[in-house]
Length: 64
Image (cartoon, rainbow, N blue to C red; front, top):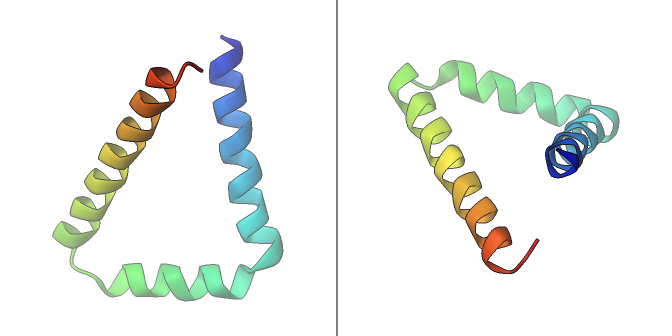
């Protein structure tokens, strides 16, 4: 359970840093996402999920 809390806390820190340090860049990125076709956004989301799964698997292989 502590590993889940650590992961969620880390994600919240990174997300918060984006909003705190570069809000205008975030707005530009969101506008670019709005212009993309829905299929492309879904594909990018799926790729991010796969990359995250690979990182989690790698972390466990290295002995978290």
